[in-house]
Length: 393
View 1 (spheres, rainbow, N blue to C red):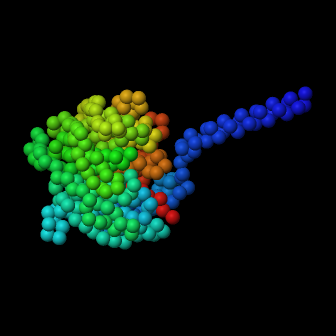
View 2 (cartoon, rainbow, N blue to C red):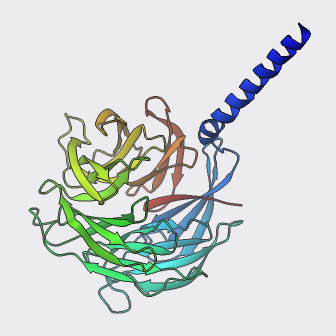
View 3 (cartoon, rainbow, N blue to C red):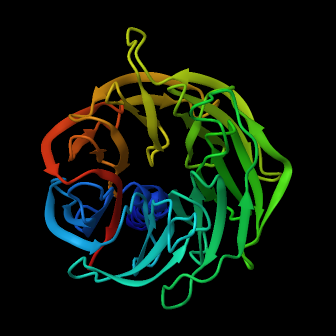
């Protein structure tokens, strides 16, 4: 009798241990590391008071930002990107004349992970006027740049020491669309590689198109996919794109139409299928508005988009099966012209850069509903345009 009970106990313990092992990865994937040390870097426009890129320490437990001052002086670092190793930061310099040519620039900086200070490594021409977006391919060996006024995209290799090399790819977009003031020519506004690093997707506001390129991960080359693009509504003015975490759906925020268009995405041929377009604005709003940023929550449950004019963050719930968006409310950004926003590394806070009121405002994200609640934190920074978190030492 005693041996039977002992065997049963052993069997029970074994089952419990096996269940814990099986549950381990799922449990660990949802753990939020709030004990880590982070920096928040802020890209700005420098026409007025700003001098360049600013840095803040981020307390992941409280969400508090502590100013660290100017990290690097550089002209119009409107959009920034941090490499996967957290050793280097890259910024576009959004200007239309660089060393006498019709081009902007890209600057490479090394990061001091103790102080947050940035040291300039080198600066190269972006190959087009007014670069407005920069991103890494998934290997971290290349940066991709969208030149707004130039209406083109380019790829640059990165050296082991972080310096930027000569462009490995350059593609000039051509054409126009129906808005004579904003779409008289191509205006590339966003470019990133897909999760498998096989394609690069560019969003062109002037053409109302998503352009898809084969991306050469070993060479940094770009070549048109088949089909080479997908059209949005005439006059939509697509600006930025965000994939859901599973890569099955993509969402494009349309600046001129104040809307979001959902697409299904087939990663094998690199093709997009248009699903549905929804407004980012409440039905009773009739003023002027331009959308700016879009981001999917790491959980994949919610999508956020910024309205400039209505000065709000529009929140949508995502149907994981169909990709359909359902409005979950809109929330004042506590400032004017929310150019960019980002979700912190824990997924608990959302930070908004209000360009015209020179402030960054934070919100706590409700994990169940996506609702945004102001934290009452309001940080002053001149003309903030882009926010990027990174892990510090």
